[in-house]
Image (cartoon, rainbow, N blue to C red; front, side, top):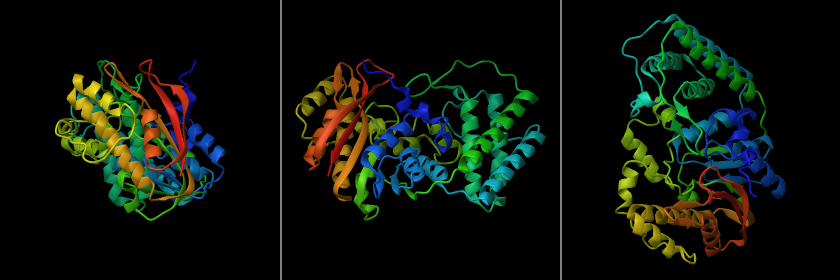
Length: 404
């Protein structure tokens, strides 16, 4: 029987130095990348075209392997750069000074009028109003510090610590494969809670600074770009690809990182969120969902036996979901074609993917990936069952691999 293998998920990363800077449920374990690198040996240049928070790049850098990352979400690209930076002693000392300065000022101020809070829809689901005011005060002082800080890299550590603080003091619950909300409890705002939140922020800063002292030897470049047009980013040649694309499960690509993106200014309104989901493969939120009704597949062919039957079965229950699944694989097809332009002969590629189910129709995602790889000329295509996912009983995670 295949188990859920939590050691192959983000849970394994929490206490792994820089890998644990910010919890993201979709992230896969550092162990997955480590195992694959052990199998491959020491590649010359690794690519992760769906890099998320930068797990692949950081594991490579820790082993002295050069790696390039592509991520369409600007917040995740920023986070990966922060995690992958070679911090100097002066930068880390500056980060510590920033943390204490912010905490001291936030502790002195009892209340500020008209504090900015992010335009996050139903923000009270995330934080009770009293607690939100405390966080807004902390963020205000963080913003006050920014113009006086010459080293923005030191400030990045404080920004990540703030993200850790807001999520730990939120109503967000992570007992699901994505995210939900706890039942709200009455919060009595007092001096002690403000002190606890401020102390949490400082503690996280110190934790991040300590883990950032670890030297990393490899060089990693992070591009905030689209993995469907890799060949236009830079003319490079990769001998290894390790990645995990978003799964076709109709969960918003930015759902879990939405609060960070609003607080730090990567999102201004709900339309921005929908536009980013529309750009991302597999994303669906707001305007991205409504556009699916008019979407047409164009000339891209998905050469997988029974693919059209799968789409028709889903389409009968929901035309929008039928289009969603179809578009997902069209986008992946475009991505794989783009990938063929930047690989050296013999390059090995590894894709961690999850299957999905819509109504009574099981979508064999791993098999369709294998068909697409063969369609674009990859050899030695195979799939390996990795683990049972924490969701419907039919859903699993697979490692699909091939050689160019």
